[in-house]
Image 1 (tube, helix red, strand yellow):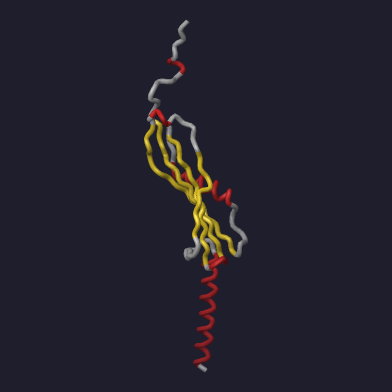
Image 2 (tube, rainbow, N blue to C red):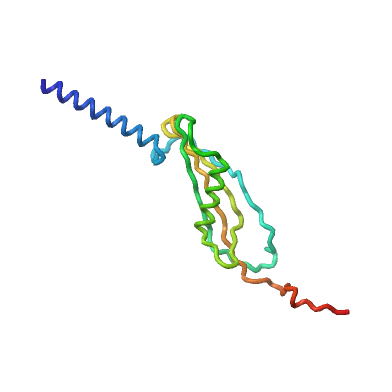
Length: 149
C-alpha cells in the first residue's frame, strides 16, 4: 500500500513538472531558444547631411530591440510593428541632445524555433551610430551674406 501511494505521488509530481515546463516554454519569457536562427537586414536609412565638411564627431553606437512569440503559428506581432518598436526603443536609448542625430541605421530580424515548431520567437534589433555636429566648416548663414550692386 505504501508503494502505490508513493507511485501515485511521483506520477502527480511528474505531471505537474511537465505542465509547468510547458507553461514556461510557451510563455513570453522563453529562455530555451535552440534551433534555427536567421538574420537579415530589412531596413536601412540614408541621411542627406553635409558629411563632406568634417564638422561632426561620432558619439556612440545605440541599439533597440523588440521580440514576440508565436505558439503554433498563432499570435505575436506583425513585422512592421516589431521594426517600428525596435527603432523607437533605439531612439529612446540614444538620449539625443542638441545637434545629435542617428545615422547608419539597420534593423536585423532573427527567428528562433523553441522546441521545434511549437513556439517561434521573432526578434528585431535596430542599431545606429549617434553623431554630433560641431558646427559648419564654413560660415554659411544668410545674415552674413553681403549683397553687392
